[in-house]
Amino acid sequence: MAIQQPGTGDVHIDKLLTNMSVAYTNDDYIADKIFPTVMVDKQSDLIATYDKGDWLRDVMQPYIPGTKGARSGWKVSTDNYFCNSWKLGKEIPFDVIANQDKPFDMFNDATMWLRQQAQLRWELEFATGFFDAGNGWQDQVAGTDFIAWDNIASSNPITDLRLLGDLVRQSTGRKTNTWVYSKKVWDVLVDHPLIVDRLKHTSKESLTPEMLARLVGYDTTLIGDAIFASSAEGDTDVVAEIWGNHALGLHVPKKASLLAPAAGYTFIWKPITKTPFFIRRLKIDETEVHVVEIKSNFDMKQIDGDAGVLLEDVIS
Image 1 (cartoon, one colour):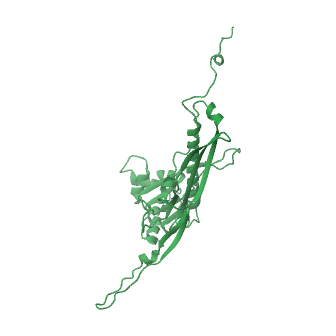
Image 2 (cartoon, rainbow, N blue to C red):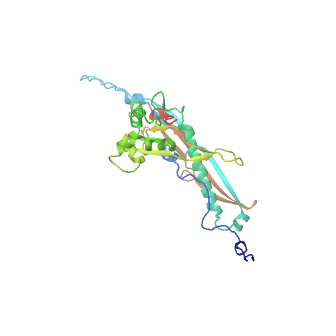
Image 3 (tube, rainbow, N blue to C red):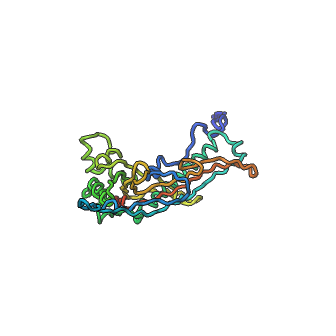
């Protein structure tokens, strides 16, 4: 039997598709949504801090007519911030730009990759600095202060969020208005029978962040689901969770302002632009390369540890 000619390999030469490609980024980042941001003109400066006890203490005294009334006041101390500088660049040779085919767009791809790197850095900065034990919050430990939430039969996340979250009000006079969960914790909450039972008569939908906030009595729910490659370049990829097994309750104002207590602020130095990230493109003729570069100057700063409560290892 004669071989059919020509074959498929003779009439088509493989080339790159121009309408699709594959790259990996996280769907969402939350680090820039937790602490209110403060745009600052200097890389470092002082923060005026009023004494909490002086503002919450009752010092009013009875007044006797004809005498000078009681006098009192408050102490002020200072803290400081320092915006560390982070920078990363991607070099693209002139020859690569001249020779690229679709779907490659090296300038666009480099910009997207650099922004991903900056957002990943922010996420890791918050998760390692504030979403773990021993970072200055009012830590509450599963098994000691409450029952882990994946112990479905015995735990009560609604009560825990209300009672343990209320530690912030008891220490600062301001309520916990924001809760941050890892995705693994959120997945347990979505199916927890106590929460499902409370909501089944009001909605047929699965639990949403807004529903849980209304049920417990706070304003904002943030869910950390970003991952990162913890392995070194060239090694086999090891992908890890950025956010742990915890829940973090905070009092944070909607925006920074004078006399506003807060668990923390993110200070952003703006010598060039009023944005968290500054991206620019350079052309270096001597080495015949373009450089796409991103820079971020920021300090995620805890202001009042009493304005936050960390529930450690809410799932095992």
